[in-house]
Structures are given as C-alpha cells and as structure tokens.
Length: 367
Image (cartoon, rainbow, N blue to C red; front, side, top):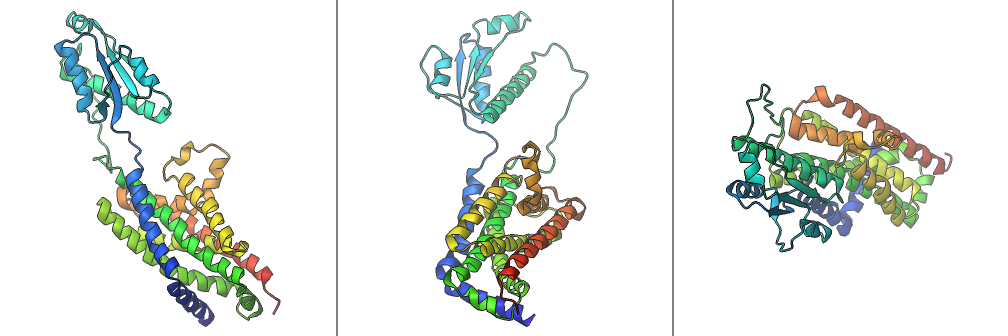
C-alpha cells in the first residue's frame, strides 16, 4: 500500500508541475460540454418551407399561417412559380401546395388534397417534416370543426419523464459520459507513455515495485484528478443547462467513481502499449472517443446498431455510464433500474486492469 501511495504522490506532483496538462485537463472538458451541449439538437427546428396558396381563400390562409405558428417551420423568400424549384436549389426543405379548389371542396363536404413535397436528402429530417405536417393538418381539421363526426376512440398522449421536451435533459447527461470517457483516460495514457518515451520506465522495470502496484498508483492519482474533472464539469453543466437529479443520486455518484476507474484503466492500457505520446493520443482518440461517441447510445439508439457491430457496444464503458447518468437526471428509477450497469462497469474495469498488468508484467525484469 505504501508503494501505491508513493506512486500516487509522484504522479500528482508531476501533474501539478505540467501547467499545460493541468490547464487542458479542465479547459478541454468545458469546451466539449459547451460544444456538445449547445450544438447537438436531435429535434429539427426552424425548417425552411415554401407554401403555395393557389386558392387564396380565408380557409387556405388560416391553414398556411397555422403552419408557421407551430414554431417549427419558417417561411422562405421565393418568387418562382414552381415550388419544386425551391427544393431543387436547396432554398427550402419542404413545399406545401394548396389547390385552387381547397375552400370550395371542403365547403361542399368533399375531401381536398394538399400536396406536400419534402426534401429526402436527410432521411431523419424528412421523417420529422412529414410527421409534423400530418400532425398539424389533423389539428387544423379538428380546430376548424371539419371532422365528419365524433370519434369513438380518443388517445390522450402525455410525455413521461420529460414533458417539456427539454433536449438538454437527454444530451447533457450523455455528454458527461463522453467527457469522462475521454479526458481521464487521455491523461493516464499520456502519463504512462511519457515515461516510456523519456526512458524513466526502465527504472520501474528494474525496481521492486510490481506492475499491479505501479498501475494502481497511477490509477489512484488520476482518479483524484478525474474526480475533480467530474465535479467541475457536472456542476457547470447543471448550472448552465438547468438540470438536476431526480430521485436518489447515490447510483450516479457510485457509478461515476467506477466509471472513472474503468476510463483510467483503459488509458493506462493504451499507455502501456504505446511507445510515445503521439501514439497514445491517437489510440485514445480512435478507440476511446469514437466508441464513446458512436457506440455508447449517446446520439444513436443502441437498437439501431446492426449486428455484429452491436456486440462491440457491450465492451464500451461509456454505454453503461450514460445509462446511469440519464437515469439520474431524467428517469430517477434508482438502483432497481441501473444496478446491472454498475456490475458491467466493475467487470470492465477489472478486465482492463488485468490486461494492462499482464502486459506490463512481461516488460519488467524478473526479480
């Protein structure tokens, strides 16, 4: 234990002396929080749309004005005769054409067909536009009293957990996972690879300290740094984006500690294998950042990832922490809903430590 603490104090002293690393350890996570927190939006808004009213009646004007009042669509300045030109030029993402007999057909009790043209370049955005226009049309028909009769079945929908559709409740807890997956592991990888690059690791190989003690000492040092990063980033994120815990915060607190250990062990594993800091940075960026961003459920649902790539998600620690984080800030189910994520994080941390210890043990001189 004394050797582990001594190694920890040594790492913290080196970390404090390196002012650039000290600054980057807290500046880069904050930049990532703001970039991801403000830039990523999963719900399309301010969609440019062209409305061509060939009827010019009071009813058609109410319909066209109502589209813009949804606050999801914005009008496009377009003076052409064919709305399709606006889509071809990329001026608008959708075009709505109201026929010239719109009011007459509806007044006569008949059905009037409105043509909607949607730019399908972005499939997800096209689906959002289609559903939004369909929902508005149904609402318009009901509000104008144009329904043929009273429906026998009425569905009353209520959004659970996030009734205000606040996107930050989904994005920001995920950003916490991405940040804590990247930067603690990056610092640990740089610390380990720096010793190999400078040759000081040879003294460790020839010393009596074991591979496990060396790794645990470094892990403890950067666990302290990671706790500081986590407190700083999470407190700032909660203050800026106005989110807070729902339910028991204990699973999140314990899960953060376990996740930091897994993240640091991953960085140490990269550092053990890398011969210099450039390779260590590339390793963390490629294996750590991309996996945490794309295969953790941060943006894309895990159910959408095809087999066999979906199997890789089970060894991504960020997947389990993002589940814990979103439960803490959105659902609040507590231990009953996320205990398996804690168990998986613990298992991954142990596996990463075992692999790193075995690799480093082979490098040391026999005692």
